[in-house]
Amino acid sequence: MAKSFAQLARENLTPAARVKARKRAKEITATIMVAQLRRSANLTQKQLAQRMGMSQPTLARIEKQGDIKLTTLHRIITGLGGTLTITAKLPTGSIQMAKWM
Image 1 (cartoon, rainbow, N blue to C red):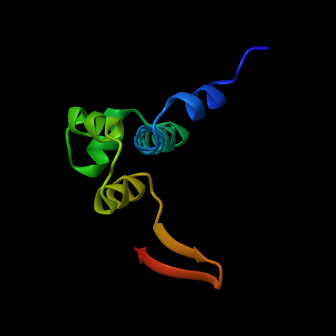
Image 2 (cartoon, rainbow, N blue to C red):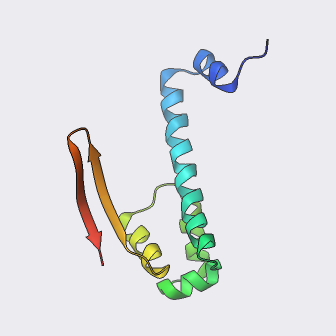
């Protein structure tokens, strides 16, 4: 019977390689989310970049990078007409960390 990718990874990757792979997967997911936010607002990169006061190539780089600064994310959300709220979810409850207007 064929093994799944997850099984092969567990058997063949070192613990350090697994950590690196998980980190990269999170970066890719973050990248996809930024582009999806823009698309869900039916905006092109050029349109959103204009709203943010930056060039389209700069926004394209932001969408491609995996680790985005909170200030940059705030600019994107604001450019989309929204607000950014950060909430920490702990076993003892949720705490609103920050809300930018």
